[in-house]
Amino acid sequence: MTAFRWIEGASGEVVADGKRLEAVAYGPPPDEAPTIVMLHEGLGCVALWRDFPARLAAATGWGVFAYSRAGYGRSDPVALPRPLDYMTREACSSLPIVLEAIRFKRGILLGHSDGASIAAIYAGEAFAGRVDGLVLIAPHVFTEEPGLASIAEARRAYETGDLKPRLAKYHADVDVAFRGWNGAWLDPSFKAWNIEDAIQRWRVPALLVQGDDDPYGTLAQIRAIEARSPAPVRSVILDRCRHSPQTEQPQATLDAIVRFCAEVGSAA
Image (cartoon, rainbow, N blue to C red):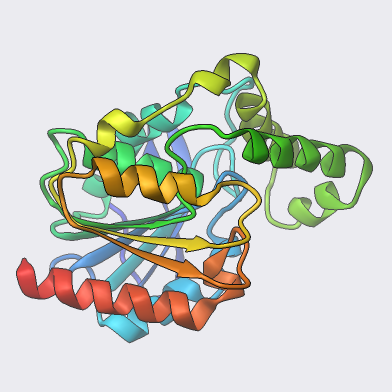
């Protein structure tokens, strides 16, 4: 394993499961402050976080590390189709390697959509002891028909609309990025996907951030997490917000995360 070189705002890379993953860091390194590790959505990457990681580091005083999973951004591609348990594999195989590469000591996992699911799975594992909290933005813990319908609409937009050229600006292999995510979610067998059992094993508090107009998940996702977590959960539901609170309601999202980090940091 090659250790990640933590240089403020500079592009770097880590290697996990034989794949080179693009990465960037802001703020102090893990031996100087807690670390926020950011896990992007199913069509995301480092670049699509935009300025949010830098703003988060400045507002919290913590280190912030973001990376593109294999198949996304400028990271190495993956073979398709993705296995239907790809989020569990990310949580239990790739993410632990990434955390070792950055010398993660304490901090939180911040995930958006698929990234939130990966963080939720990781937090339910016995090896998650260094994680002090979770920030889950638009989390999914089971499939819903409205969400699957929106994912099917995304496929039509990719094949006949302008979604493909828009995504191609951010992903070296746009077909791998899109079809890896879309193909898994629209596989008929994926309707049975459910990670609520992981939530029941959480030992750390969580902040949930959800837009009230999210086309990919209803508030049933939030309520299920609230009902099943044995650890404290705080939910922030944002009005006039869809699937990406960090870009649609950035200040409200940032403020909620900063408060959560302060509470987690004082309790650690």
